[in-house]
Length: 134
Length: 134
Image (tube, rainbow over all chains, first blue to last red; front, side, top):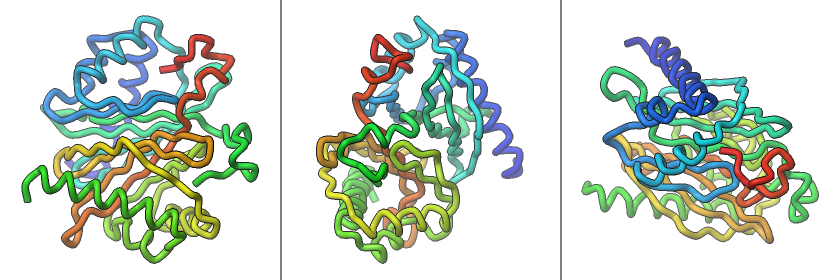
């Protein structure tokens, strides 16, 4: 598959991830994550979870009250056969910056990593009066 | 190289990254990032940057006033030949959760992705009274 098609497929997988999340569809979410690789996932404001069991357990809890997320600015690159997709997530008044990483497994992209963090909260940080930490 | 040695090398590379950052050592930082892969980087509270030029420019600005960062809980996994390291960063009173991804290039791990986001700020989010977004 050409890199352009890989990137289009990664963007489609990324959209499917947010669809499963918003629809509270645990079966779809479970199928989106790799079944064979070590997984890691960092939800907003929380330390990274490692391992398929911990990651899927966290999603099961989240999907019991699915958030309403709009995404924009999705951009994908392929690095040594893994896809990395960055995007912005909007949930109500909150905007998050997310990175999702994917491996090609069983003829499609499957997730191995998700991290979402708050956007533009620097000015609430007393320790960063200039609005920049690093 | 065994996977255990790959993981030890990834943790050492991760430590070298934070050493370069705290020491404001731009030459070391530049050498830590892959010279051949597409790079992406999401600093705390900011949208992802894509491409070596944008990523290194952001580090040059940050290294002009290097932060004092302590790290802990570093944990590495290898996924299809890429290393992913999660850790916590403490800068003054602020704690961040970070993910750093690495490719094996020229006999060592070189960075392709960094994301750091604020830890445990959920309770400041009006839209998430239960302290959880996703």
